[in-house]
Length: 148
Image (tube, rainbow, N blue to C red):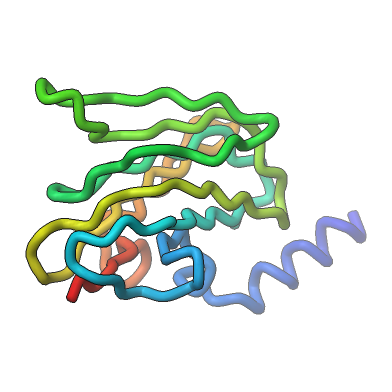
């Protein structure tokens, strides 16, 4: 009971959108260069009092994912298009309450400038999914990278 009250108080003190799933460069930046091979990190915190069990990343158009860092305790599956390019990545595993996971991958940036939007779908052990895809920009924003 006491642990539950502490967890509730901790989660209430943090704004919901402040701890969302984000994609940044390995250096923690939200911008990168046209055509550059960049290492990105997808940071996924568990925001509920139940575990995250699946993380699905939709690769933005023009971004070419080339490799991944292994993530102990997680399996990874890929979806590709007819050209063999990765369009989605799904990691299955467990991220406990009050924990986060960081998934590293390398991608080649698009050849044109502009913002790319990373859509992330976070599935919890009760089957609920939080869509970090701008479907509600105030509550569940998609992470963006400015390619310049």
